[in-house]
Image: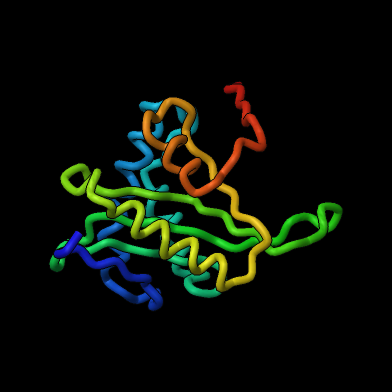
Length: 159
């Protein structure tokens, strides 16, 4: 990790955000291969990024990993409120994590995720939730290493 830097993007006009779009598409292709039933539409990555940019550093955080000038990974999280009937607490939602294949197994995911969780703590969230696709071999052990526990089983039927 000596030649890799991890940083948060704070400006929605930062050109590095555009470099994340192909990674987001690859992430969804991988999740689909491992059991995700919904498909990313052709403009899905761009629509997602539009939402991220709109709330960047207010409701969303984007952390990236760089190898020189190349963006090699990202993780994203957001803030939301629990329903009033559950106390209305501020909750973190760790939404995405991706590192390109050439840089996996070197601590990049851990470094980005640590920065994301530090932001959640700074924002005063009471808990953080995340989802992982059911058959991905490393996702469940990785999130469990942060202390996450299974809370729900999420089901879907295609009509």
